Every structure is written in structure tokens, then in C-alpha cells.
Image (cartoon, rainbow, N blue to C red; front, side):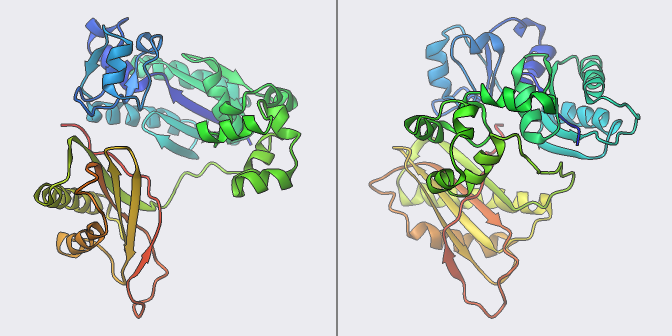
Length: 362
């Protein structure tokens, strides 16, 4: 298999700098400039000061006093993303979008009959630059795991190929933090185990890794050996629809919670209709002022579509949350895809996690 991973460089920030020349060369962060605002993307000029995505806007401004905060323009980003996919489809229809600004492409058999994946990647980068005025980085390898790492290797505007003959040596010198699935806490645990590089990871037995990391132990075992059999999936089934909102001030009064819950339900219904989604499990997500987070879920025997169906369940879930002495910072609702429940079953409580989608800033 020949896989290309294309990843736009500082995507939101790059679009803003392209559309407003006065921002070029300056440290900018895309996000909502508020007490609870979060950085969506930082320009490379801002990253030199330690500013990065998912960081508090207030922290970012302290790190970089001259930082320029730019409100996001999501429709512009979606328009550019559509241009990217038009280019991708000129080479293959096996495209797996990861987000607006990155995707995997399986070019083993491509529409242009180009033998080398690196030549396709080079053409795509050139066309992206000519069409959008932006730069992309690309990685080429025989599997998704290595193609993703390769695209990050020489950012920005990079192109890296990891050949099968070089894969094991390449992985051996990787820091474990670069390996997919290894977050901060997992990395800290690996360090305590004496695992700092891909080679260290490869020297661990499958038994030990599964004992320490469960199912991910098998994944880490395979990745350290350059094994990743995941195909590029061009069509996928949506598992959930969700929304969440972080409040400017923490809320703890019944009236405020009820109002925000009501509006969250309305936004969720809008997204369900937009995505024509069918699900039976409603999940409530609450993050408190001290960043402690809980989720509560209930599954029913019918599809959840309307406000009148969802709001009573949301209120029922909220009854189990103590917020009067523990104010709420963030509130989210999601509907998940549960098809196996029969009509005869009673509603049942379950614990589950959904990837919640934030509301676009307006």
C-alpha cells in the first residue's frame, strides 16, 4: 500500500494571514478573545513564544504580549477544505478525512498512473499552493502510522518519505511522544518503565505492554515494529452528534443551568437534523470550575430527534449532578448511535464517552 498523509500548515492562522496581509509575519492566534477563550490555531510566529492550540487565550497572551487574537471564520476554512478535496480526488477516491485540514490518501492505484507516491505528494503540494495560496506538508509511506509521522517531520512545507527498508531504523530513534496514541500521561508512564524511544518500546514484550496499557499495548507493540494494517477508509459511519459550550462565568444557579441546558438541547437538535443522524443514547458532559469532568448517559428504545424527546432526558441526567457547591464551567450534550437495543427493553443507564464538538464562535 502507498499512503500519503497531507496536513496543512497552521491552517486557520494561515488562512487568516492570507486574507489579511497585515497579519503576515506576526504572531496571531485564532480563537475567541474572552476569559474562557481557547486557541484553535497559532501561527508559527506565535509558537516561538510557546503559544499552541488548545491553550487558554489568557495564558497565550501572557506568553506573547504582542499576540494578535483573530476571531475564527469557519466558513472560509470549510471552503478551502473543499478545494483541497477537489485536488485529492484528481488522484484517488480513497480519501480518509481526519479534519478540515488533513487527510490520508491511498494512492496504490491512482487515477494518474503515477508510480511513485512521492511524485504524487509533490504534485499535490504544488497544486495546493497554486490553488489556495497556502502550504501543506506531506508524508509518504506504506502505512497510515508512518505517513502521519512523516508529514510532521519537516514542517512547514515539508515532504518526507519513509521507505519500508528504513522504517525500523526510523522508528527506533523516535521519541515515544511522536507515536500515535501516546499522550502526556501515557508518555510519563512509559518513561517510568524506561521507555523513551521506539527502540525501547520494541524491546518490551507484548505481555508487559498489554498488562500496562490494555488493548493499546497491542497497538504500541505493532507500531514499534512498523506494523499498521488499518486501511484508508473513504466512507465512515458517524457514531455520534454532540455539542458543548464553555461559559464566560461558572454557573451554579438552577435558573442559569436550566436555561443553558435548554439552549444546548436546541443546538443538539439542530445538529441532529443537519446530519440526519439516528441515535438512542443521550450523554451529558459536565466540566466543573476545578476542571473535574463527568459524563452521564441514558439509552432509550426509540430514536432521539426532537426537543420534546431530548429535553426531559437531559433534565433527568442533570438531576444527578451536584452543581450548587461545585459550579459548572462547561456543559455538553451528545446523541450516540446505539442500534442493538430492542423495543422491549427498559431505558438503561450507561457510562460512555463521546468526542464533543464545540459550538462555533459567532
